[in-house]
Image (tube, helix red, strand yellow):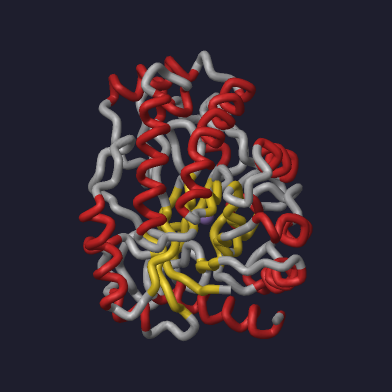
Length: 342
Ligand SMILES: [Mn+2]
């Protein structure tokens, strides 16, 4: 197991030297952030990022994410060219020493929350999801969503959503298979394992299809190709938002196909789909974190791990979910769980 910590590049308020001081953490998970989605990542930008991370005494072996262009998900005319570009980025990352690439296949919206600073009884804040509030939103009539980066102009978003009306789950699966088959040879050649991130939350939103939601879809995505380069990011918080997903079972069963794990806890509502992110320990949320780590180890997991979103504690200001303190506590806790399980 390699314990890592997500770092958002030079613009991240958390210096690499702080990350190096977290016990057990040996590497960072990062990405080149200033290249338009769909373009090949320039070698000099990859090399600069790697050099910066190595200079801090940390490894750079996991990229999160290389984003998948919407035209690929839509199966548009530009998809073949964009898939070739993606494959070339993988070759360059492999040459730079990257071993795992985390990506997702969620249409338009990435992770979704309704509150980025939900107050907890202890005075900390965490990300939360209110299902009724999401159901009441209509992105076709404009959207104000916390964390939504407004990467699309309103007219552009409407045009994109209109095109997705033609894409049901079956079509999205077909486009996903085309993408995967298009990039896996390059990933294999580059020594990279692809690790798809499950949809967050793991159900359809705004009428858009979402396909990586639970055991059935994990089995299906892995069956598209038996290549060892076709893997899963086990994000316990994402899959765990649906109480029907038994993370201990999934961890045990799919451990050999999990090159990367996002380990975090959430507090599920007992009555609906609402959830709130929780501190990492088992006692603080709904997920059996100790059991998940034991199951991973028993299943032969030998991949990269990172603590996932943390709360904001000790008056820290910063990127919601990605402060230093609570994630550092999470990393130390997870390191302890692995120590006990090995
Ligand atoms: Mn995650």
